[in-house]
Each structure stands twice: as C-alpha cells, then as structure tokens.
Image (cartoon, rainbow, N blue to C red):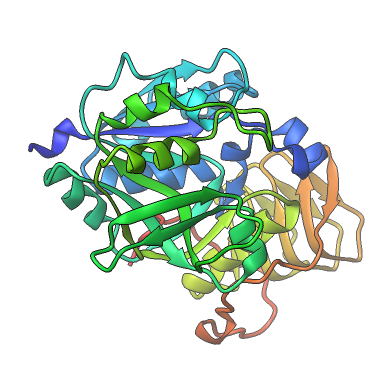
Length: 342
C-alpha cells in the first residue's frame, strides 16, 4: 500500500468543560504546548509518517481552529475541515467523515498530548491491513479511570476496551492515537449512546469493532501522555516538553520579555509581552498576553484574559533527572520542535 493512501483524522470539536474559563475561551486543541497549539504537534507527527491529507473535525470555536491552521501549507499538508453539527461525542464526530474516508487512516484525539517512541509502527499495521491502538502502561489508577482500559491477549490482539472503567483490571490504557481500517465505520454506525455521558463514545465503537472479530492490536509506544482536562495538565505538558528538550525556558522569537525578569521553567509564547516583574516560575504565557507589574508568579497560565492558577500536577513519570536545572536565566530562547524530534 502506498504511503500516500493513508490519510489523517484529528478530532478537535470538543469543549473542555473541566478547564473552566479556559475551556470557554479556547478550544483544547489550540492550547499552547511549547509555543505551538497541541494540534500542531499532531500535524507534524502525521507529516513525519508520510501523511499529506488530514481531515480536522471541528465544533467548539470552529472559526478559531480554521483561522489558526489555514490550509495546512505551513505543515506541508492539505487540511479539510468538517464541522460536527452537534456535540454528541467522539464517535458521532468520526461518523461525520465516513463519506470522505474510504482508505486506512491515522486518528488522533485533539485534546491529547503525547510522546511516542516509535510512531511508524502504526503505519506498518495499516500496511498489513490491520488496526492498532497506541497504549501505555499507566501506574495511576485515577488516570486509567479517566481514559480507556485495554485488555490484550498474548499476541497483543485487543480482547476488550472499557471506557472510563470504575475498577480497572489492567494498567494498559489508550492514549488517543489509532491506526484504523475503514471497517471501523461499521462499528461507529452501530454505536449506542452511553449512560455515563449520553454521548456516542469512540471507545464503545472500538469495543464493537473487536466483538465483530476485527483485528485490533495494541502497541506500547507511548512514553508520556496527558489528556488535557485541567489547567495543570496543560502546564505539565509544557514542563514535560522543556524537560525532554533539556531546556530551562522557551521564549518565542516575537515575544517581548524584560531582561531583568528571571525565568525558571517558563514558556513565553510568540506575541506575548512580559515587563516590570521579578520572577516567573513554572508559567506558560499565552500568545497575546500582556503581563506587567508583578513580583513572583508561580504555577500559573497567563492568558490575554487573566491569570489561571494551576493545582498540583497529577501523577506522571518524573523527568527532572534528565534536565540540568542550571540557574535562573533571562534568555533561553528557541523555537518549537516536532513532537518526536531527536
């Protein structure tokens, strides 16, 4: 199968209700990680896998997404936007592209940020005519309960998928990255609404897909992931990126930051202005934010609309040992790199 036969699909229609004011003002897929929207990391990943055509399913703040991404030329691909008529869940969103996709495809959930060790394995499954879900061994039961638990046989074939399990019986969880054959749309069409959220959930579709004797395999290729649900999740994604790039800070090339301001694990996005202050520690300053007249700000998201304090990070693998903390500095600059940049 030719590489260009594989298309990409990104679900980017949902509203982040648990994000509070942040979820009202922004669609989750446009939240900044390392000075780029989350979806930009997905698009760069798809490009690295040979994908040149991507369908983006949009809903909440649809105009914002279209304006931010444009035609996709900057990512080296052709983007087509499909609007979800009603916010009725991930399976409902996927059903909206059935008439557009009749070939194998890579699916990403737009509110997940993850780091994959070998994403090319997903393409290899499609080349064999098989489907696959990217997974991770998760030590936090709470995080499994918020995702989906994946049970597999000895040959890695999926035997069961449970959406938001109350009592997980496995530590293997899905992480929002799938390689799928078109037969999955038959399962999507048969998906009932869930009692939990009264929506059509894609995880339920996958369970029906497996029950229909379709081959779905699981590959443990996710090194780190976050389902961006709370403000602290977004902060943690940015800190994770800094740690993996062994950077103390990231300052966008068009950001304006007073030289006297000390930065410690800070991400200052393009178009932000930071002046008349002392210290920013574990802070993300959004594009267009104007911050001034402060002493110390810690564990905070700074948006053009105000400050959002972040709680303690949810349990995740600690990567501080891989990063040289160095000293507080003012000019650790650099542009964003692809999700799986070496």
